[in-house]
Length: 107
Image 1 (tube, one colour):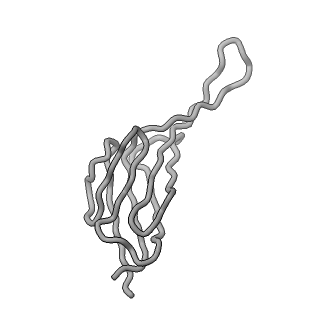
Image 2: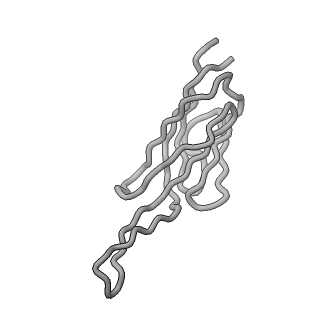
C-alpha cells in the first residue's frame, strides 16, 4: 500500500481555500466536517492548526474514520461576575479558519 496525504485550509465560513481531495460542511459556527473524496484504507492521523490569532481558542479533532473527520473550535473566555470576586469560564463554539493534514494508507 502507498502513503496517502490530504491537506488543506478551510475558511471560517467552511469554504475550502487550499487543497484537493476533500469537501467541507459547516452546519453551525465552529463545527466543520471534512469528507475525503476517496476514503483511506486505514484510519488517517489528522493534525490541525488554527489560522490567525486567538490565544484563547482551542481546536479539537474527533470522529476520525476512513471517510471523514470532524473539527470543533472553541473560544475560552474568563468573565468576571458582577459583584463577585470569582471569575467564570465561558466556553462557546467559534468560527475560525484552520489548516489540516491527514496522513494514512491509500490505494
